[in-house]
Length: 530
Image (cartoon, rainbow, N blue to C red; front, side):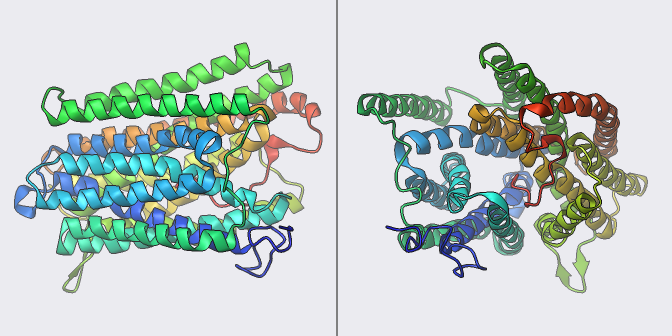
């Protein structure tokens, strides 16, 4: 099939805002998947912490928040084996189909948990969602890239449209499932998230043969059939071992042989994530065969990784600590209508949609004036915005404490999300752009995988500290927000200081790749941390 007639070809224009028709298929699949993910996640901590009289579980907030953090961290971690399985065994398209099916099964299982006197189906459903998202999330993004073999600005524009779908799904998902879950019944909200994923799965299954051509239909195959067979056997073996261990753990927990303390497990998982990142960077230096210039670039990647983890550990308090703050300490009544607490989770996505094009235009304006800020400086600005957001919520929490638990205006949360979103726009796209341009060419995929460990670590830390927002212990809340603001502000200052030697280091390494200036890369895509 020729490139022109191939429905998935990048030469096929006019199909979706002047882009390949396949982009529409991937756009709506990802939109519905993000609807389901961001529709479910905010409900989890509120449901588990809600009193039994409110049809919740009445669990300790620290335990509930830690579970949400572990769940979200595992979603990011699952992307690493998910991409590997797709590359070596399934192919991108089958990985997305199987992933969507697992996610749908997970939501169905969670819905069934309302009908049985057991919490096992609920947690089993979360496991299915983690496995499914690991297969779907990295591979659908890879197919977007495959639509544009020529790369360049048109690919960037395609990703911008794709990321718009991410944020539309995230925004609408929290609104719909939040209302159903909080106002009608928790499992109505959970089920709505599952229906959304099922819609996305069906439209991908029906439309991908018509719009994607051969894209993602086959895995990457080695030219030597013997080596290919060996690689497939290795993938099957390690996947089977991993699933076997997971099944064993589930059985032991279900039978009461093994008891899991979520905060303790979360702490150990944090150590594991840090060890993975440290071990990988050490491996690159010692065994990666890097040149001196490449090592300098990897140093910059490691520095940005550390500060990205700091940023995400603050940002990912939104589905736990800030979600609980919205429910317990925010005035949400307009007339006779009570705004669901989870609706505040949609503010970030709305601000992303509004401000991402403005920030991208700002970078282009600076570039046209020959003013280009280095990546560390942009990161520092983002950390500064995030620090400002937690200073805002710190003032609000002090009002709550001084008035013995009185509720504050919703404007505090809106302003908080405004500053936090601006911080995200200075960190997320800059980080993604820096990883692709700084990484040694032969390690780009692996470095991108390690980069998302920063997000996993942030989700985990955000979950571990989220239980500090508690009406029964008001003084914990200002301490949490003060500590977070100080960490963010201090990190911003340190990064500004480090920006000078880092820029000098990159100027020395720049000669290895004259056409690119990775430290001054101007990103024009939307963030994909979601």
